[in-house]
Length: 307
Image (cartoon, rainbow, N blue to C red; front, side, top):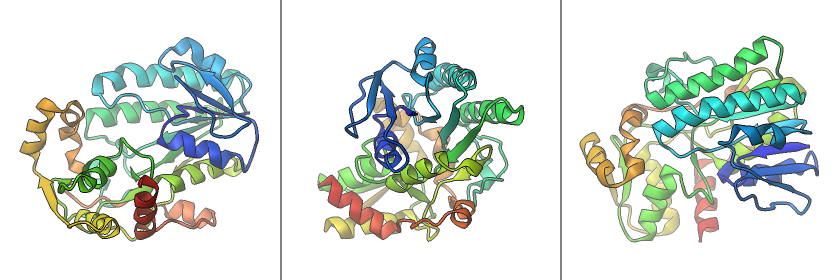
């Protein structure tokens, strides 16, 4: 049995499809899980309730954590450490392997222009401090020999059926409405994005590769990184709309945050947009034969699927 915690999210639903290459015993866990494959086992659960985590994991060989709690600092500080401790304890108890889908928030600010699995851990934000805490919890148990686990780390997302992504909200949807695309701080800085179908496919591959465990992996991401302006330009070309772009300075983001709750959470993360942001997945590429989706291919697919 391979179990996905947070199964209805952007990564979880695609991951469920990819896991069929390895097993037909897949358990989907979320508040209101829906079948992706005919043979899926559905396990409705509120994963912020620690008591049900053990039940959700019981009988699992591999557990994938792709949960997305609300993007609010107070929610992350309250829920993430408790949830991760419950997951780790359950995996140890039931002898299940753990695959934790992570982001780059824990890296030092000076590592952002070229991030690798060896980059210095020193989060410059409070959300990053939470990510550092929960990643450390996993790796501490690995080092102690009590848990088999791996961390699959991704850059920012783009891809089809990804309504909560920055790219979908501020670029695709704006263009679709006949508005200007938005970008943060500086559109002439390079910024890596991981294509969600690639991320899901690679996560399934890692979870089913014995020697991939007990370490950290950057998920495959096109190394031909674009600037924000170039990235937006590909969307406008594919959507056949005027290439209009508004770059939001920090003071505008703060004002918008007064009226839009999710934007209130953004100012502390703006260091990711005022400099180049390059996510290096060379380690994965050297280990696995994997056809990484280019930005032009990924944007074309995203627009086609969204139509």
